[in-house]
Length: 247
View 1 (cartoon, one colour):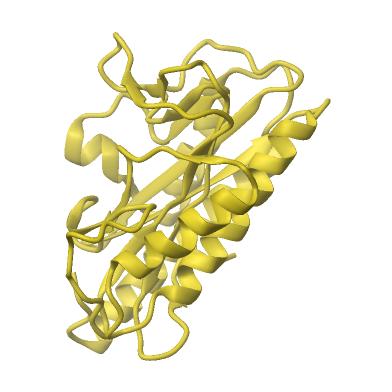
View 2 (view 1 turned 45 degrees about the vertical axis):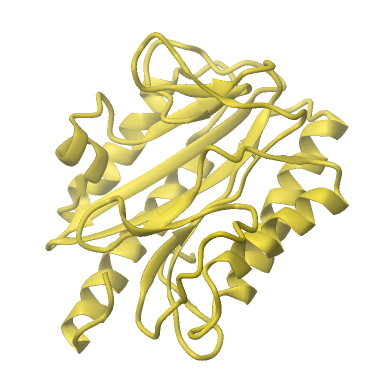
């Protein structure tokens, strides 16, 4: 969607704050030995206090409040009985709906002991997210975001999961345009003032394809390599974008 009124912007800001609060609560709660279902309950309780709903649950019937993916799982992991173990790489992906507006953000948590490879991957994705957001300016090609993200991955010898991408968001979870994490020279869409998009680098430690799991939801790396995921929802402007899901 694009911002059409002051009420649109305020509605998205409210939803973005809920997403940020939920991510913060989950980061504070995560610990070795807890199940991913227990971590998901932290999100459900935060949503309930805010009067928000899980957008994946409402839109797609996802069997959880949030997506929690571990190690080689990239995205869309189902919360359940799996217990978090030392050294796990945990991705939490929070998408809330409140008052008809949707915001989406994700982050990667490294449980100790943290490997050097996991630390490099996490930091690369976080830097790539900042670089991608810096490239998101009204009038620029959408592909400028992917160019910035993939350049950072190359500098750090990390690998973009090319089948997965960012997207428009605002009234529902997935809206046009797609926002690839690499430069697609065949696409010529431009970013417009007020456009709402989710920018989300997804990197793997080895060159991998995105592979669907038998559960019908979880997407993992084809090589078994660990993966990371960082994401914010933003409003594009002529200058620096407004990050709706920032803490």
